[in-house]
Image (cartoon, rainbow over all chains, first blue to last red):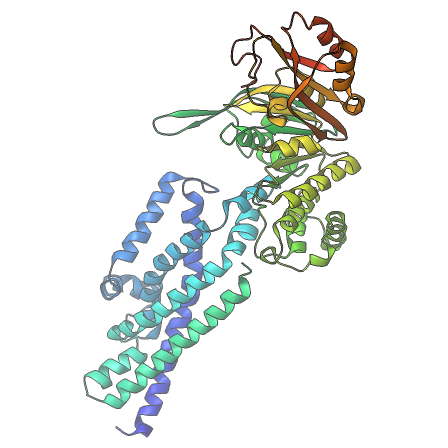
Length: 218
Length: 338
């Protein structure tokens, strides 16, 4: 294949990868944050300790994290169809990507929140702050650098998963690499996709690090 | 201002229960600085945390400013806490907020309008001398400055009561002195009632009007600092003037003489020696600045048994001195504070 043939394919595939990643990342940030906050809040010594709810949430997270992505993707196909009306294409790939990334990020959120100095929470309680004020102004704000660092790790993982999502017709760089680079022995395509993936991951990581530095004043 | 009655707090682990506070009664008068002194594990921190109900006691009463805190609902308690400032050993500052942002935090909690907030923050920073550091983050300032931020933050809501949880324990001696001075100054200027806990005698000595000593969850001694120091056998005095167990020789009288204020400046030892023509041996002692006055304790040895020295001892007592005799017949350890 000539470069002129490869180029539009690469452009299209990169766009698809970015589409999948950005959507899945946005949904994961939201879902993982909520799930992570609930994990901490309902846990022992949390702001709203409800042991049974905590156990259910923890179980969901653990099941979600123990399934290999490729299996999870296939297992939830009916769910994906119900949600998007199809099981192939970029939109359909966003569903399993999000389902896989949410529990992953939720654990990272939990860790980041637990790192917050309990003395600061004590001080806020002593000031008469409500649970809502403590969650928003103390917990989430103090954990912000950790939350962003965790999200960066998660987004990089999503980029990786998105390559596998190509297996169910999700498209993207991974799909291109497998179909042309691997199955048709087009080494040029393989190299180009790898380079592009590295660039994407590098960009995500750099952006994440920059944001963490901005937020952290330790 | 603060009344604590029959307070009890038990921590229950799986196999054992630890009684952290075991029936404590305490009364802190308006405008005074009250220090609770004790070693770590004595229950003083739990006691303090029960005053704003960061810990809920198992039984007893906590009344602050006439309000029974245990009778309040969640929202009422949060409102009451805004009238009780607290400072912490490790400061408890928000690392992601500037000095000004940290001081503004309690004002946000109480929903003060933004414009008013800025003015109040400026006022508070001025009060603790941190105006120049308003834009710094906690990681960029020293421990003493951090505690000043903590104090400004605690005073934001114009509380009547300030609770201090080992506020100077993480600071070096010089910084400790400046923070203690600030606390005393603020207490006087604002009519603030301060309840502090500490393991440092220095803190009690420098700024406390009253003190209590806590051991194993109980208050073993409590009252105005001056009265405690002048009371024979007082633990507080024993801590402030650490004299070893007296080694009483046969035919000698060992006396601990505690004196304050004017008598601290009077040469009572030479007066005693001259009046009775005896040799007075000084075994040890110290004079300490306590609050605004001076209190000292001297251990002296007089020749002869206590019976022989009855007149001399009466003379000392008549001079307004507190006298504690470790005379002959005193078994080892007797008359010595544990």
